[in-house]
Length: 154
Image (cartoon, rainbow, N blue to C red; front, top):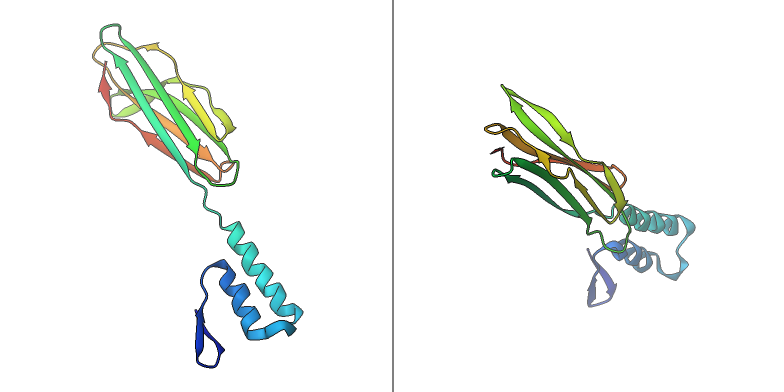
């Protein structure tokens, strides 16, 4: 936003401070309580809109020689200046006709900033098709998503 400050001069104000600075420039030093409350509300709104971000990694490992399968899911919080709870649960599903049936479930792991869930090495039937399914949560469950690996044959 561009506002006249002095005759012949202009100042450009952007970002969260724009509302605060604009209020001070317009109202001057004799700003009333209403404009101060509006400025506080604008700043608190910006703080409340902090973006929560996370990185995730999924892996489905199959050993066809020993007929073993393992699903491992990992999530790491990448939000700046904030500690966030993250959670992950990994599952192995087998194709049964047209539907997928869960055969192994790893623990649901909830930690600060980094969590790993692993089903461990489990047996798989020769010639059957499997996939890994991973449920991720961060920001105390406010953000959640599910990822699925490609199907593999044991």
